[in-house]
Length: 114
Length: 112
Image 1 (cartoon, helix red, strand yellow):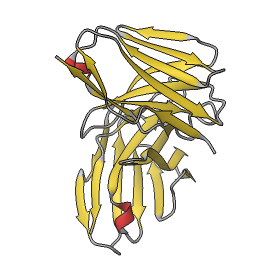
Image 2 (spheres, helix red, strand yellow; image 1 turned 60 degrees about the horizontal axis):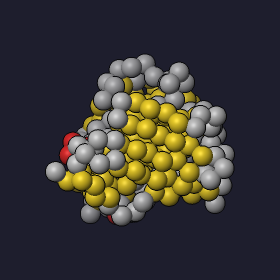
Image 3 (tube, chains in turn brown, red; image 1 turned 180 degrees about the vertical axis):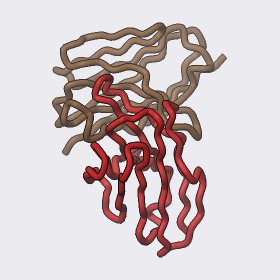
């Protein structure tokens, strides 16, 4: 069956360091992969999308890599700040376009300590 | 929040009663979704719509129905609520242009 796995444990990082979150998937051939941020009591907010033919994507302090051979995406936050503390969700579109919905991982809770 | 509102934001109801949750968007997005989020499961797709009166089932559709009579509104109905439907429900919209989904603030539903 199709599965998306993210670090289930909370990730504690010291302020200023790089936080790296992992998303592994099985039995998918996604055309692209997305990352979302979710704060307590709020809906997810889109951060980045990376396509299957892209190895890396950057946006300000965020970097995403996508290895379709390993079936893995890594999400990096450089120069982390306490305001980056949140739950980060990885999402795949099973049929490519995403029009029929996304499949989400359970999320990784990131805590940036001052 | 890309002009997406959900109502009510919180609801407590009893087992066996019907419940309707409303999602309203002002972005004229064609695609709309209902997800539920539970501890240990993450976000799971309930139903989605690809246009007015066009809907389809998602991963966890049993016990839920939806309707979309206008582009801006997508309703989720629990015909007879059960305690297993206690959850946080999120509505989302999507455009073909960007692939990203825009989420509403969520509705916390408790079925006692």
